[in-house]
Image (cartoon, rainbow, N blue to C red; front, side, top):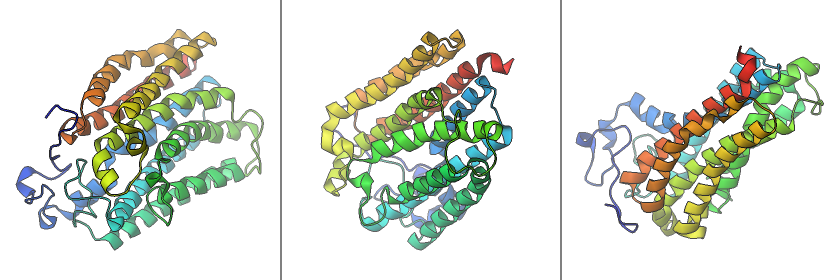
Length: 339
């Protein structure tokens, strides 16, 4: 269906049509345990966690502060935080009753009865625990700033849809993603590599030269595109979220302004590389512009559709856009440092 007001049932993310019940959700007994946990972890979202680490590492190579072990630990921590947040949100939305059976999005395993709520909550806690364990090495390198950023990331992930005042239900989810999955993640990745070269272990503050203006600016494209993923998700779910009392920014702003937000966020991702080039970086930093056709294709869908049949693929394609753009941007930033 192509009209803006139309709706259609989305096929479950990992289950086949033969496993669907009458409501369109998978029958709990028709999905294997391992596949259910894969659905809960939502691996298609992992580019949002990996992309800022790739960009921060590219800039670290450019500035000759690349530290491979720190980069690997930063990547592992980012991916664990992403999965932990996915699990926590799956659990919290289900227990709050904000994931109806007829939602347009990918199957939520807790709400669908595929996995028990207590098991999903426990898995989220274990995943966050692993992220903290990985973060111990980064704390050894980066000291108190990493403690603050790491704990803030865990708290932000849990309280996105959990706790007494979930900020994702109050139109603040976009800001959280922009800050944590863009600015903080890129600058943090750069920091834990630069600090290896410029400071003794366990610094209490931020040593000079470990968080640069370029590191903050380099996080803007990842921030914009990661937030654009959330905008697509919230445009798709606007009607069901509004009915459930979940006031995402898309519910507050409406379709037109949300689409303008998406366009501005994606546009930011293409303005920043040009700014780096004008600031004296190699012309190779313009490589992300090669992804403009993909951005335009996704944009046409976002501007004309609201149904899951169209926006679920657009959601995944925006994730692919984020990863492709970030990889090319990292290569462009690294430039001569790769030679």
